[in-house]
Image 1 (cartoon, rainbow, N blue to C red):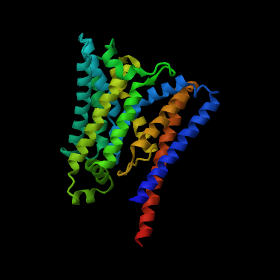
Image 2: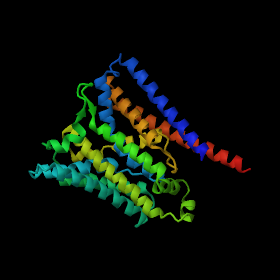
Image 3: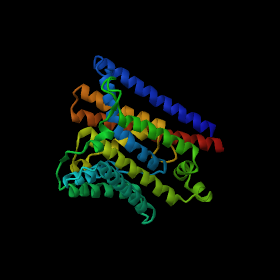
Image 4: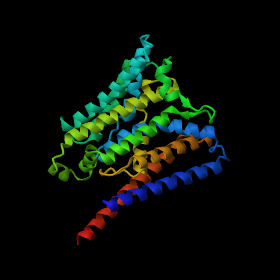
Amino acid sequence: MTKTKNKGKFNQLGVLIALVLLCAVLAIVTKGKFLDIRNIMNVLSQTSFNAILSIGMLLCLITAGIDLSVGANATFAACVAGMLVQRGSTNSFLMIVLALVAGTLVGWINGMLLTRLHLPHPFVSTLGMKNFLWGMALLVTGSQMVSGFPAGTMWLGEARLLPALGGGIPISFVLVIILYVIMHIFLTRSALGRSIYCVGGNPEAARLSGIHSDNVLTFCYTVSGFCAGLAGLVSIGRSSITNGANAVQPLDTDAIAACIIGGASFMGGKGTMLGTLIGALIIGVLRNGFTLLAASSAIQNIVLGLVIIIAVFIDVTRERMEAKARRLAAK
């Protein structure tokens, strides 16, 4: 256990160093523009959406699963709120509740498809759900872009603390910090949190321990859905609009990248909230750097694709080395 903890801390330190070096490089190539306090606040605001999505994605990855529908689910949840705007509603509370319920319900359905209908792999079911939600997002808004949200609905993604400090600290990032602290305590201190790691790291041990794996999996995908709904509300405040066509965007890719960069594994049983937050910040800093450097979308996609490939390669290499070490230890 001590070795595992130390290894996790070492991985987190490595990712943190990578983030610091990336910031230093961008500060140099942008001639200090990156370090402008207003730009830093913008990075935090831009990171919030992906960081919230990454919470649910991490839980799924720890169980050796994946949720490819989180981005589409966030857009769908925002479109549910947009549907009320189209119908003349100005009730922010109702919009927020329905968006969160819609996102959470989708996550619960993903879990049920996996555990009750026994679909072969969450990759299949959540990919299908992604396309389903794309259609639903267009359907509920009549394929129209929606604007004119009331201030209460936009508050989470728009509001700032201490406006004098470079335009203010985004409320959405304050929420991110609160959520990550809560989830860190949950994963490390609660029985259910430890069960999540056990289900992903050693399914047979989980079964012998009496852990109901189906319930654990359903819980993880439901939380992922809730986080998607919350991220959808953040997106409304950031852009002041919602558009069902965005459901087809590969928003889930950034969430997966944040988790893998932060030390999670596709093999399951690994990942921390701190590492994932640093991973989300790396993705956010990269995207901000591209904007400051006026890089084309083609270059952005190439670089981010390479980052994901490298992260997966490191993950696979790490797994092979650990497996080899275990075999040698067994001898």
